[in-house]
Image 1 (cartoon, rainbow, N blue to C red):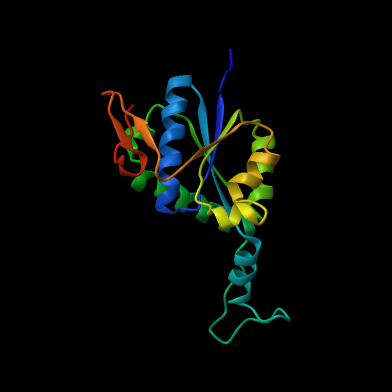
Image 2: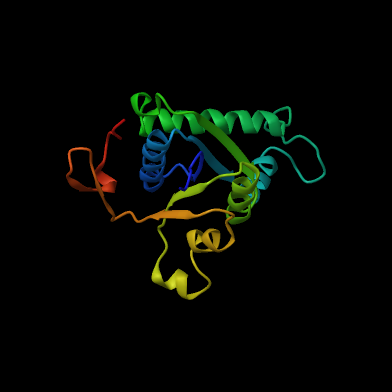
Amino acid sequence: MITIKKILVPTDFSDLSVPAVGYAISLAKKNAAEVTVLHVFPTKAMQEYFSERYVTDGLVTATGVRRQPSFDSIIEKKKWILNNFLQQNVGPKVLKGVKINSLVRFGKAVKEIVAAAKEEQSDLIVMTSRGSNLARLFGGTVTDRIARRAPCPVLSIQPSAEVRTEEDRRVPIAFIDKWAA
């Protein structure tokens, strides 16, 4: 028998990532598992974040004296944004009864998602696939690359997929507003 105790769900805070989070929470409730919601902050964005406030020689810009934010403060801010995203898009009722961990990492998405799955000892990665056939032709989508490198199975949810509700109805996953407990 396969046991699922830890589920990793990467999100970029887009509406397309919400169904994957909801689906992972539903699976977690059925399997008494915990969910780790991961946001990877791209290294390039991090460099831009710091370069907006500082010139290359380390002097403060003319816009005013500011303390350089620490990585810890940035991580805490991103975790707050991540938790706020979950509250607004999934809802507190659905989140109740499931252990949700927030994880923020810096770097390249594929590498960091695979590394997080290994470190967290995830049993499953649940994510929304949004790649085109053209992307698959030229090396694959992010989801494809993660599936090839992941230490565990990857459940790819298509934005056009349908799911069966507890009322035994099939509905498009994109239109599910409330994820049943």
